[in-house]
Amino acid sequence: MKQSFAVIGLGRFGSSVCNSLIESKQEVLAIDRDEDRVNEYMDIATHAVVANAQDEATLRQLGLNNFDHVIVAIGEDIQASILVTLMAKEMGVSRITAKAQDQYHAKVLEKVGADRVVHPERDMGERVAHQLISKNILDFLELSDEYSIAEVKVTNHAYLEKTLIDLNLRQKYGLNVVAIRREGRGLIVSPAATEIVKFNDTLFVVGTTEDVEEFDDKMN
Ligand code: ATP
Image 1 (tube, rainbow, N blue to C red):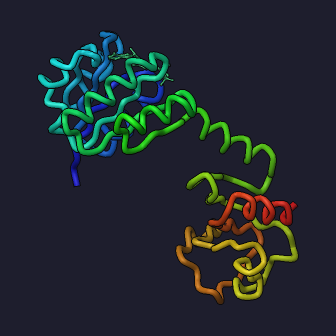
Image 2 (image 1 turned 90 degrees about the vertical axis):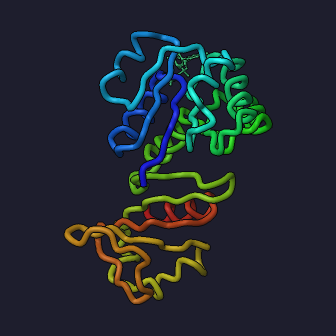
């Protein structure tokens, strides 16, 4: 279903969000105070506007409250990011996602009404670190402070040619296998307990970050 998005701030993060939304054929209003950045979206976004988002009258003129989703992608100017988030909230925007520079910025964004706060640099740093530390972790995503989902490649022979029941990862590590990626077979979503794990399978496991790391250790 087509939704409408207003992306405020067309830096690296905002422009990446904008490009993906445009590729997904969503309705996108791209806003930045920098004309050169806006020009890049003139022909591809539904609308592209040069504006200072700190000006409430401008936001009202743009009809910000009519958008399904507003993304505040201003980073460095923390004051502007907070003010724009607050104004969007007061205008009645139903969903606001805001980018935070650090945890203090994130706290304030939540307080002034951001429904979702993202930390792209921190999250990507964590993902890459996990991939660097372990040769078996292909990807890693924190779901909350406590829980993560990880793609773990099975190379340890002790785990091969056994069913998920035999491996008993839920009992041993508190992990749930939500999918298996197998060469030639693609993704097996919600695998049956009788599924046999093969060499080079990638298990998508969900559990506490501690349990995911413990399981990964056993793979090495
Ligand atoms: P990134 O890491 O995504 O490149 P950043 O964290 O460095 O971004 P900035 O460069 O400060 O963040 O801001 C991103 C964009 O937001 C810039 O293109 C900037 O022109 C725009 N921007 C900043 N303040 C405003 C504002 N008040 N109104 C409109 N656009 C703004």
